[in-house]
Structure formats: structure tokens, C-alpha cells
Length: 220
Image (cartoon, rainbow, N blue to C red; front, side, top):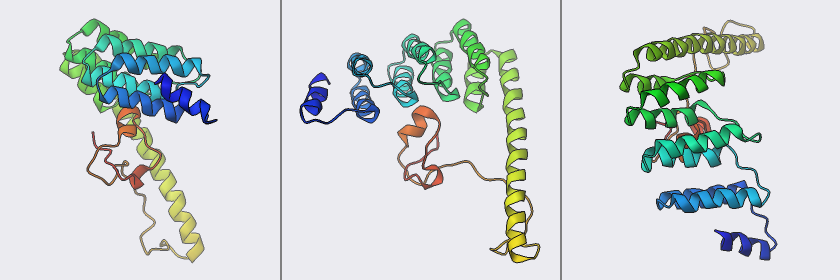
């Protein structure tokens, strides 16, 4: 890794976060987590700030491939302490799922509380991790938060759709949209992607800038 970075610098090419993230993912694919961690240190020494993709990749591989909940939690702690990046619910879910597999209820409860303290909304994966570990009370609490988020998000999407359809109706001077559809409210489906292979950006971070246009699948 250091040789690659040195070669780039000799060629007057400055490595950026995409360069380091690619190297980290490559070492993770080869199950060399020690090398991936070394890249993270080299990244900081080179003056390039790790982002949520950097940490998310390490958390995902420690949690799912290496089956080391403690290491995944250690990387998440680094992410929380980093002022240049912010954790999302996907990062927490990977740690929660790892501790759920280990049936470590105390750590699972501890990290769920941290998720709540960060004002992040639990999702179905959070609920599943708590349910599999038998934490019924936390599972009910998380499910209530999921339901509230759905109701709030559904209402917002309906209002946005109504405003959009109303604008189209004004353009035509009638009660229908340009495409002939009724101006009734509708909800927009969640981005799923179009391909068969998994989108690693969505898998690691829970989001993808290409949305439905992504050529990879967003189905977990």
C-alpha cells in the first residue's frame, strides 16, 4: 500500500479518499484486515480524511466476514470520534448484528442506546438484531420508532407528490398531470437498483447516489 502511494507521488499524482478506499476494500476482499487497518493509518498520515465509506467498509468486513464484533465496534468508535465523518444507522446495524450473532446482550443494548443518542432512526435491520438476541423490550421500542418514521416519511412524500402534481395541473389548466395521471397523492418506492450483483456502496453505507439508476442491486 505504501509502495502504491509512493509511486503515485513520484508520478506527481495525489492520492485521494477514493484511492485509499479502493485499497482498503481490496485488502478486505483478501481477508487481510491487518493491511486494511494499516491503509487507514497511512491515509491519516497522508492528510486525507477518512469518510463514512472508509469506516463503513471496515465495519462491514469486521462484522460480516471476520465475525469480530469487538473489532467492528472499535472501528465504529473511531468513526464516532472523527470530527470529519458521521456514523449512520447502517454502521450501527452492522455492529448490532455482530453482537446479536454472539448473543452478547449487554453490548447489544449498549450500542443500541448509542444509536438512539445520535438521533438516528432504527430500521428493520435494527429490529431484527434485537429480536434475534431476545431483547424484547428494546425490540418493541425500535419497532415503534420504525413505525413513527414510516408515518412521518409517508406524510412528507404525499405532500411532496401533491405539490408536484398540483404544479403540473396548473401547467395544463386541468385536474390531470402532463402524463394524464390523476393528481392524487402517491408514494415513491425505495431505491432498489437494477442489477443482479450487490452495490457495495449501498451495502456498506446504506445509501447510493445513483438511486434507481444504479446498475447494481440495493436489495439486502
